[in-house]
Image (cartoon, rainbow, N blue to C red; front, top):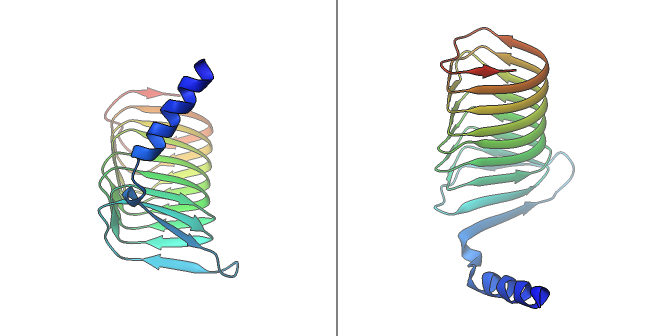
Length: 167
């Protein structure tokens, strides 16, 4: 009986969800194909492909690929699963990322969840919110206005943290 009620709820959920709520971009050319996106959309943006240079605007950005260069803006958040993330844009409600290497040079707002091998915050970057980080190597050269929760093999903090630090 539980299975039947679960299946019914799932079907109702699927039928009431609109597909136009997310723009889906599947970009698969040769291995070094890079897509550049400068448009603005009021919907969520899902990208599946090798590499994306995003300088547009979206509600949310979801990236699954090898390399993301983000210099755009999201009203809500950025979700990324990739090898390399270069972040110089602005998010309204945080970053959720699982990447090999992450370089932050923009403005992070909200609650941020990050897992990576190396994480670097430049002196131009600003983090306004809590950061939960699991990384082998982490370096902070920009200010943090919020709490910092870090599990890392090596941590370097060269700027002020306006909040609690738990390592």
